[in-house]
Amino acid sequence: MVEPGPHLIYLHGFASSPGSNKAQKFAGALAARGLTALIPDLNEGDFTGLTVTRQITLLRRLVAGHPSVILVGSSMGAYVSALFAASDPRVEALVLMAPAFGFIQRWTGRMSPQALIEWEHRGSMSVFHHATQTWQPIGWGLVQDARAYPAYPEVTVPTLVVHGRQDESVPVSCSQEFASGRPTVVLELLDSDHSLADSTDWIIRRSFRFLAPWLTA
Image (tube, rainbow, N blue to C red; front, top):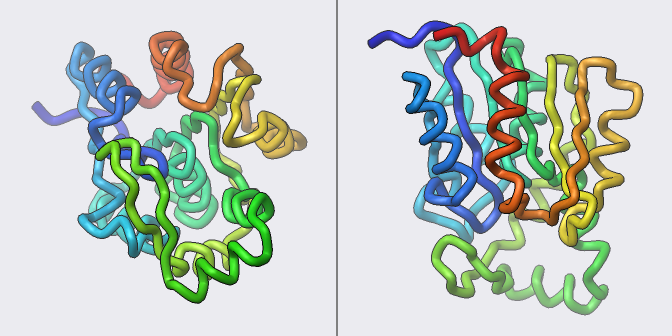
């Protein structure tokens, strides 16, 4: 079956995987409608070497040959989706869940100067990887690379942003700032945390309503 409409890609969050709960629920809901989403592993077998640029480069390879694309992203995957949409006219619409706008500024801002010096000196720092349920090293290259990107990409395509008011990782004010002054952005605030796990079904239904003009079966 050849699917009509744009190519749909789901980007998971930092220290996550294509097997995340939201990614799989989205895939299942799409399959029930005769549609599919590509869900790449943004870690690419090398979590330590993860950077924003590497994720954008992977996304560029995945959309090659497709005239149009819809991106659905969670946390860092949502931020990367927004960055890509700001620079590639093939992106027609976005769904961003708890987007990690300005993540590196917020992350390093919460760390002491000494901790940052140690991270840079050692070349990596251990973080908890939710997909493997283990502590894994993340390279200092993530910091160096991410500093080159804007905290809030200039997105002009229709965009649905969903954010939890009790988000403990990315303040809801980040999505509010992104939505402010952008008429193409629809912001939905939920009584949920960063995972949005208790709201996933609602988010999927809302996303399908938002994406209805493009997801024509």
